[in-house]
Image (cartoon, rainbow over all chains, first blue to last red; front, side, top):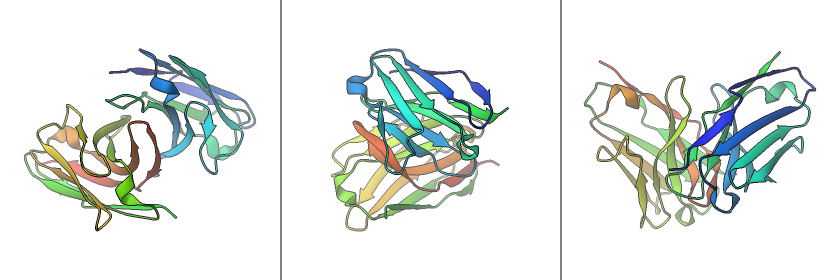
Length: 108
Length: 118
């Protein structure tokens, strides 16, 4: 099983600042089948990034993903008020599909 | 527009059973792997089960193996999760999701809450 470790656990930032979230895998993620999801309370999670770096439909270009192998990053270039949420990475290349523990981005 | 509409959640006693359903629309349901993902209170996301488009392959997390059964009816665009021998630790919001191995989880239902409590 591929274990995904996200850091930091919590990120305290102000609107307009840049957010950098990390996701480290215990072994190489098959063909960069790595996704990022945004989850707000009371809502369904939303796919932001798939294939490590491709934005999902309708996702603003302030969200970007990078990385390969075991190290991946989600960057939010300038935080908007609606971006404060929990973010999860997920590998979907090999079973069992696994999620990281999440990074909470909260308002400073 | 893709829509996934879950139903069937509720309160059940430990050891009881519950059946979740998800009606899909807006895409070719029979072509896609579907999954159930849950989030327990204060916890992260966990894929508990999945099924391929033709029902030829299924997946169960160790935590639910032998107790949960996933199925689908492609003629009715419906995904189901039969849950039995429920435990307190199965308490969670359960999401119906399109996606699986090599397919990102691109569409999610709004979730249905299952509470296992006496």
